[in-house]
Amino acid sequence: DRMNLNMTGFPTSGKSTRAGQLHTYLSERIKNSTPSDAAPKYRIHLISDQTLSISRSVYDLSALPAHTRSANASEKDARAAIYGAVKRVLSDRDIVILDGLNYIKGWRYQLFCESKAVRTPSCILQIGCSKEKSREVNEARLSSEAVGAQDARKLGNDADDVEGAYDPANWENLVFRYEEPNPMSRWDSPLFTLIWEDGEQQTRQVFDNLWEAVAGETRKDVKPNQ
Ligand code: ADP
Image (cartoon, rainbow, N blue to C red):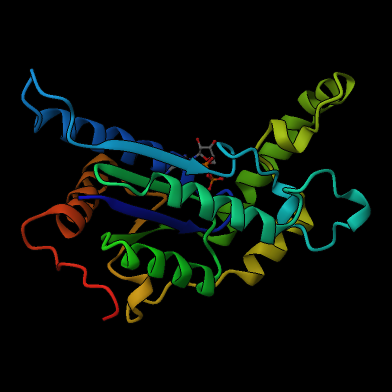
């Protein structure tokens, strides 16, 4: 079976951190359930803006077309790239962790439909973090990057692509546009949540529940066109 695990959350709310933890958790689980002489049953793919070299600036509505640097430079193009990457690895034995904002309801619906079309269980892992805390993280990143960014520009690199901070106006706008997942809608369920404060034990519990829902004995089988 394949699986599609989609993250969602504010910018700089800790999504990549949790995606990394989920990756580690799944790797261990798969390793422990695989006989030592057999090939692992699953391959895990971590897909994110970073892995696809999508700049934070694609989300910036105030960015003028004049700033467009590549075919990737709009959010629509970015979504198409992500969609393509997800579809490409959605074969049997694949687990996809999609680490991204995934903040648009219609986009989550699109991901859900794609999974369903290929009978793939999917779920949403929401990273809960207050606006204030996430903003603080972004601001800390901006200031720690200030020095590094100068160096990057001297070398002719785009500072946005090198580091993970968002322009403050871009950040505020993304939080404003964020569409909360709703566990009552098919495309946002099953929905799991981790908050910033959740420690090792709670995190493991949530990952166990998530695994049970998408891969366990009790999971609901996915039927297309239901
Ligand atoms: P995002 O992927 O949403 O942009 P990151 O996972 O990169 O966010 O996290 C941003 C920063 O916050 C990183 O420096 C990370 O180490 C820290 N961080 C993330 N989640 C937690 C957490 N639950 N507890 C403490 N620090 C965290």
